[in-house]
Structures are given as C-alpha cells and as structure tokens.
Amino acid sequence: MTMVTVLAGVRAAIIDLDGTMLDTIPDFHVALSGMLAELELPPVAREQIAVMVGKGSENLIRAVLALQLKEDPYSPPVEARFNVAMEAYQRHYLAINGQHSALYPDVLEGLQAMQADGLRLACVTNKPIAFTTPLLKLKGLDGFFELVYGGDSLARKKPDPLPLLTVCADFGLQPAQVVAIGDSSNDAQAARAAGCPVLTVPYGYNHGESVQNIDSDGIVISLLDAARLIRSQTTPT
Ligand SMILES: O=C(O)COP(=O)(O)O
Ligand SMILES: [Mg+2]
Image (cartoon, rainbow, N blue to C red):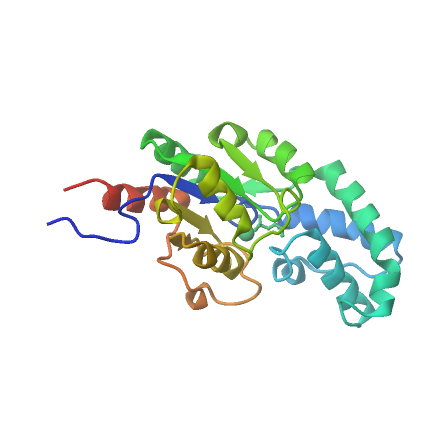
C-alpha cells in the first residue's frame, strides 16, 4: 500500500532565497555597514543581522535603526532617518549584490533533481525584486525558475499567503499540489495560510528562533534532501 502523505500530490515547489538557497548575510553586512557609516552610526555585527533578515528591506532597515538608536522601530527618531537610510542601503546593496554571498551545499543538485522529476519551480522571496533578479542570475539560479516574486512584486509579502497563492494560480495548481521550502517561520506561516505543504531547511535565518519550533511538515538538511523526500512520496511504490 502506498503511504498517503502531505507531499503525495506535489507537482511544483516554491523556494525561498535568503537563508535557503544563498547565505546572503555577508552581503547584508557590507551594505548595512556602508549605510550606517553614512548615517554616522556604529556598525552592526553579522550575528545581529541574521536575526533581522527575512521580513523584507523595510523591516530590516527599521530594525537596524531601532537597534543603533535604541528606539522603537516606529518611533519618531527612526522615522526621521528612515528615508535617508533606505536610499543609502539600496545604493550600497546594489553595488555589491551577490559579491559576498554563497550558495549553500546541494542547492544546485537539489534544483536539478526537482527539475528532472518534472516539478515546476518558483522562487518567492521577501527580498526586493530589483535585488533578486540580478542575484539569481549571478549565482546561476535564474534558469531554474518559471516564476520569481520579490517582496515588492505583489501587494503583500510573506507571511501573507498572497505570493504563494499567486504562484499556485499562475501554475493552475491547487495549494496542496505546491510545496513551499524555506528557512523561517515566515515561510511556514505563509504556507500554512495558503494551504501549501511546507518543508524547512535548518541552516538559514529563523529570526533567532530554533527551527524545531516552526510549524512545518518536515525538516530537510538540504534542497537535495527535499528533492529526494518529494520523489519518495510522489512516486507510487
Ligand atoms: O527579508 C529579505 O530580504 C529576504 O528574505 P527571504 O528571501 O528569506 O524571503
Ligand atoms: Mg529565508
């Protein structure tokens, strides 16, 4: 008898970017250091950045300013410097985008395996699309994805289900047929709200929380491990 699981009907995968395919903390670190120097504020450590990434640029810049100014993210002192900070951040990030970031192990192998198994692939990230498109190209990832949505591509970003539901509609598939793979609770919440099964990689950035606490259908050690798990559950035995 074939075991029926949440992955049994999967035909497509939605894959997160930062913390799932690429370790981009070094890029964030260089761009934020440039921004903070212009604002005459002290730099932040890489470890501090890792807990703030995953909810898009606006959230990141507010969190960094709040930390360095010792204020609330929506306080008047943060508001007062937000626009200048965001402009500087975007300029610095685009100047170094991808130069300090690296693919995690077995990302290419995992994407190749999923493609070979006939899965349709989409990338959904909270990174702005203007950063995402050149980064995917630089790292040789762009050819894998039929669809790419950034954090500012649609009206709402993860943890809202909208980007995932948009991919499902674009593919003409039901949410139960589309697995989301990500590194954070942000990805899992979006997937749960959309009705997509979700797998978690343990090596990324989960807002400083343990990945064991994520409401996910499973933890996979790599995208290749994810490809093998999907294959084992979608192939009749
Ligand atoms: O918050 C970001 O900039 C990106 O995060 P994500 O690729 O993990 O969605
Ligand atoms: Mg991520």
